[in-house]
Image (cartoon, rainbow, N blue to C red; front, side, top):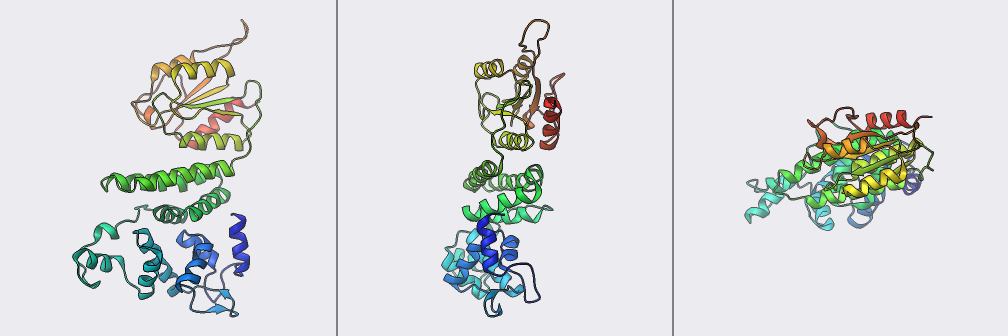
Length: 335
């Protein structure tokens, strides 16, 4: 958890739940917002708890939290914060108020407004963090999103945070814009950028090369989806594996040159779609050799990503997910 979050918890006397209600930190984690955001809503819009322990510390009852949940719902639909706070204090639900506005009637009309009310993401049975991250992404709340992502990585470890928290949320965002006429594209870009930023902040420093132990990671030509490779790179660095990351759409000649110049123990080739997965290129890289005669060696090549589904290359590893890819590469470079 970030230092800022920890400080705010100390200021609010948040060592854990007490009989008087939830602490600000607990409410923030439940709603997927930053503690500073909740205090701002309290100070600016009067959405604070109805009572405070010892007259000072914030303790939130179920009624207080329900009001904050309405605030989150309203801001996620694009309503300005001041107006969202007014509606939340009144207990107004989006399905009622937005329907009335759409029809040009009073807020009591329930006839329309489903398009607004349905702006949440369908996440199904996932970790609680997914819901908080999804809400922060829909609100385009950069501070809350950064805190939640970094907290998930610190709490669960990089591999579990990616597999069980980030991927389900990213998939939910993708489904949302695909089924809404390509709305919410900005949410997908926003979330992807902040996941990438969180990886850079939490990953260890670059691991120094060891002869015969370096892994080269690159997207195939025409492939620009780099985020899964960024996660793999960070997970390998976390385990002390030297990595050279080349990112998106590396041209064929550049990929071949990089392999020859670095002599890696392993090469991971990412393809998000079948149109970018190239069997001939993967076979060519797997067949490359270097070193003196009698002691020549070549790389272990891993075909990574959904683009390789149904296009298995004989003799090449095809890990099923991040954890398997990390394990495979660790075994390749192990002393």
